[in-house]
Amino acid sequence: MVWRSHEYDDIPGTYVFDGRRAHPSYELNKLLYSFNEERNRESFEQDPAAYCDQFGVSGDYKTAVLENDFLRMLRLGANIYYMAKMAIPRGVSVQDAGAAFQGISTEIFKDNLLSHGSDLQQKLSEKEGYWHG
Amino acid sequence: MASILGGITSSHIPAVGNAIAEGKTQEPYWKRFFDGYEPAKAWLDAVKPDVLIVVYNDHGLNFFLDKVPTFALGCADVYENADEGWGLKPVAPFTGDAEFSWHLAESLVEQEFDICTCQEMKVDHGFVNPIRALYGNREEGSGDSWPIKTIPLAVNTVQHPVPSAARCLKLGQALGKAIESYPEDLRVVILGTGGMSHQLQGERAGLINVDFDLECMERIISEPEWMTQFSNAEIMAQAGTEGIETIMWLVMRGALADDAKLIHKHYHVPISNTGAGVLVLENERLSY
Image (cartoon, rainbow over all chains, first blue to last red; front, top):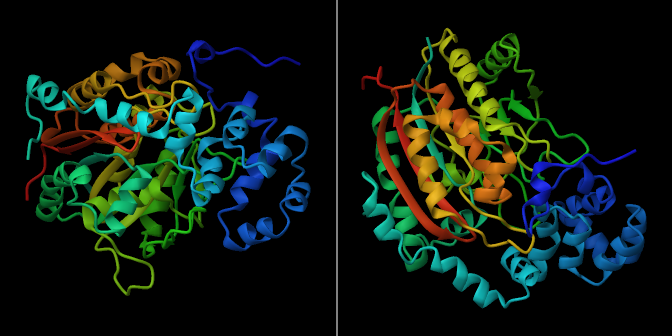
């Protein structure tokens, strides 16, 4: 019994969502997926611990859910898209999660994103045929 | 016979749908991004497709991780959008073309693409947002309906193993043959969605690679085989884990003629966490 290694394991700061991550976090992701439905979101709110038990979410996974610790959930193998179903209604955006991973504020994270656009017009003008409005 | 008029590529970022629904498309952050769709809209107005085949990935609305089909084709009369957990108002249902879908499914399997057929399929932001960017909003319950039929073709880009760029290009080539062997005179446009570079998780979250995005756009226009030299690990190293979605553009490209003509090329960065590209390619054989 061994998880095979992959070329992508060496990409720094990156957790590729493959079987190795998806298998142990299956119950957690199933709980997160259930939040597509409003009645499930309400049911969770009424008794979060019991809701975790219902999905077989236990140990560190349960603690992370009960503490709204989204960074920990991601480190434990929550899929980012599934995690967003719980985090976004609680005011935690995917950008907040990205900033937390880097240990920087969301404002700085967003500024870093905007910086990619600073020389865009020049880069596009070096290529031919891009729409410029 | 059915004909392929051309193809369009578009990112499918969730915030794009919010911006449309909230009427923010002319605000400074959004204006350049959305204005760059106008030539694509004008082209659609001119060529008037009957059917859009939308290549996208589901992000946990229709498919959970219990069953993850690598390729899944909608084979129904209607496809509904739904709440993805964020409490946003869904858009109006999309009309399908079941007979055409089943023809595509049969032809693809005959060509050894053993796809999953779906008689019920909810479509999420990956499918919906590019259509909203191109056709405007149609809210659920508004009484408005979409002006075209649509067929969803979902590609797994969420849970690895994910198909290779080479496989996606070959799927597109098979899809092209499947479309052009349908006996009805349908006018078809293929929409390749997703990407471009972005990474949402890990310490490398926030990665955007403008140079790689622009290189991909150029090569997808004229030499899509260039992308097939890369493993998915190599693409993710360059474009981020979620940037792997750009392989879905190759499904669109593979279905078009090798000498398809570039009509429009637009790139904007950032939208949310992402580099966002639009291509409009027209099959040379087309007359309208």
